Length: 485
Image (cartoon, rainbow, N blue to C red; front, side, top):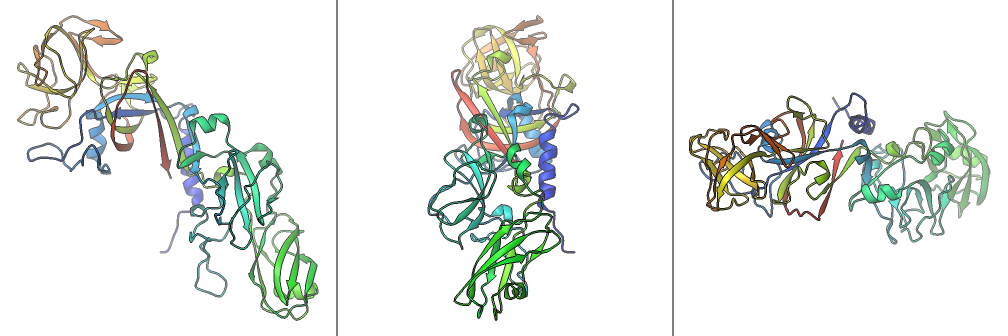
């Protein structure tokens, strides 16, 4: 059976997700970084199940259970996302002179009366939220386009924050929606997306079911010239009135003189225009544009298609104020969003989590090198170096499901637990201590420390592979994730 899921369902889902960050019994979300090792094409005998692409062009992760387990193998650290780091978002559309913008219409995708042709936007979009019907100006104001002067180019940038419909000298009509605050500009404005929020002044001034725009669908012919006034908008609302201008026998303009209230549909017939004085007019059709529930500006998130949620997270060096969980000794290639991960068996609450394992070594000869293989003859354990902290004698490492990175020649993954951790290219060797201690905020039992995040706990909601991102102690990486519902 023909069916759709409406945009309201998408908005509902985005609202539920956004609320999860702030509800008392909501979810805990962490942004994770990982994959210090390079992406490489799988080779025979390797444990990889898919071609991973290359560091320059990594492939899109598969949407399956395997892909959701793999991020824990090479996860390096995770940072909790606060409610203040989350906002509703919409695609960014900068106002540019010479552009013909789409208009707000309530009926994109419907078949035009008496035809099998669907109503589409000027740019060809068949749905409102795929059309370019709003703009962001240089003043960081957002406006909705109500009329584009008969599909002509916009040449005058809208300005001002009045709650009434704004008409610019190029014939466009705009509705001011909201202004991006300084905080929104700093945290939630990217090349492609921007924050969306409802302005309380605009919302309070909105009128439910008002009619501000009527469009000429068919101009007709044979009518008496002049401006014919007092024509009622018929429908389920009340008090809407327009005037119609007829020139050379055809309708050339429709002006709303009283917007009225309560309309969810409206009509203006040819007969009404004739009765108002356009004698002998025939074939004229007028489209009455219905406003969103509550009126323009009542709910900017719904009206502008805010079924995107943007998360903004900054990684500041080692995050030293949070136990230094983020290494700057290695790069990363993978970003994940993890819901409700565990730490020591309970849902994690710390602002940051170290995801690598660690060994406190003594009697080290040589130097461990990042990304090299480490082994342990006494156990058969295999790992890969993430960082070597020679000052404190701490070796941070990961164990993946890949050959030479975490599993031995027999395909087994064994935890490091014995003595003499030996490296390859670096030629280093060291002996794990047997004492229980805390060094540089890392707790060791018998020389070993597990990850602060329990492997395979919680749910991986998002995975993104990227080209390598190099980190530094004096550097901040700002990561914006945009989820579309």
